[in-house]
Amino acid sequence: MNYNWNWHIFFEPNPMGTGTYLDMLLSGLWLTIKTALLAWIIALVAGSFIGVLRTLPSNTAQWIGFLYVEFFRNMPLLVQLFLWFFVLPELLPRAAGLWLKQLPNAPFWTAAIGVGLFMSARVAVQLGAGIASLPRGQKQAATALGLTTAQTYRYVLLPLAFRIVLPPLTSEFLNTIKNTAVAITIGLIELTGQARSMQEFSFQVFEAFTAATVIYLLINFIVVTGMRFLERRVAIPGYISGK
Amino acid sequence: MIELRHVDKWYGPTFQALKDCSTSVAKGEVVVVCGPSGSGKSTLIKCVNALEPIQGGEIILDGIKVNDPKTDLPKLRSRVGMVFQHFELFPHLRIIENLCLAQEKVLGRSHDEAMAKAMKLLERVGLKEHAYKYPAELSGGQQQRVAIARALAMDPIAMLFDEPTSALDPEMISEVLDVMVDLAREGMTMMVVTHEMGFASKVAHRVIFMDRGEIVEDALKEDFFGKPRSDRAQKFLSKILQH
Image 1 (spheres, rainbow over the protein chains, first blue to last red):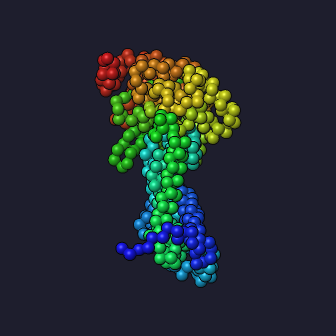
Image 2 (cartoon, rainbow over the protein chains, first blue to last red):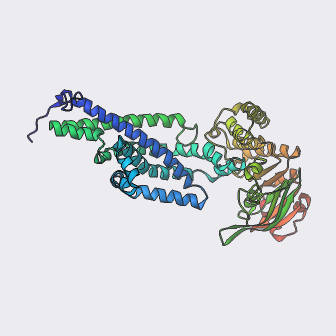
Image 3 (cartoon, one colour):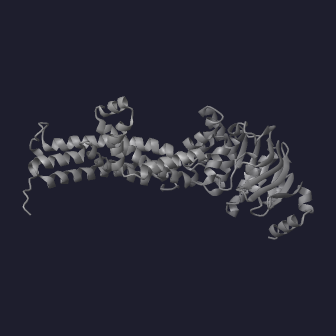
């Protein structure tokens, strides 16, 4: 293979005049982190809400939860982002569509919300399973004490269910971070996007993507470590993952 | 205090769990409900505080109709203590927090007031030194005593016990029964589903015998143990008193 390795490329100035190639990647990293964090917050909030709906006795609530989850998890993420980014503004009344298209940072907001909603369906299913796995008597005991349904969830069921599903939620957080890379298709120049433009400007494709790979591994390692720490912090003595 | 009139309960369209059950528990009365497994005794007592809905008849609790859509169920339930077969302490809360949760969130007591009450009750059931442990760090008998204390913390007008000793090792049964006997002697209104005939003969005023969803016998304790009227009750008694 005729390839000129050049690991010094990272310290050479980039053609945009915004510092070195390394600075380019780091700005991409920052955008990846921002997008992933916002998407994860959306996924957690919406996913928790829908996850709870799916466990309520009300048929209406279960139906809403069912439709929501099936809508967001049965379409490829790429298609969903295209839908929000290209199709939605056309479907709206002209003025609203125009306003949407001219929003500053439209790719960022679309990516964060789009990935967030896509991931929220998965959070909802997992949290729902966590709640369903609790002994039925827990809900009965809380109810018998006079707690309302909302209080029962807030003080008894959710604290237990979240502890149970913490390990799979870690995986979903990692997936959220990795899924933000799909947003290069709607013009979000995050870490993968910056690696690609670095490759296009410098022709150092292997260095660029090696660096991107290492950076992804690093972020995810930090997340895994953080979540492990959290799991240990909230472990209940003598119960589930507690010792 | 507790009155059941012609109560019918169905699980699904085909299985009738309770058939035309009528009985009552007067203030200060201790009523033991017994019968073979699947006879509907747990279902019966869970209908009293509407943990299970009924399809026919009516249940009156302290003058309030339980199966009336207008009844404030959480409020009504907070006035009746319930103790479960599997204790159902909240595993993520310390013992003292288990006793304080509903006092604060349902009755609106201040934290200090709730703590004082909780400590007094823990002392009463002999578990004061375990106040800051988690449920899983206690034995089954201790957990059940905590569960009784948790119910008493709400200053209930009556107590419901659903097989409170069935999940306990033999040596732990007596420590729980002792607490219940004391309670009965203090004049607490109690409805107790149990197979502990020793407890029944010691403190019960009346015994209800159920079979296949029906109240087969509802008699004064002396009459029930002396000469049960029905064949089924006689057979049941001879079986469980064999050993």
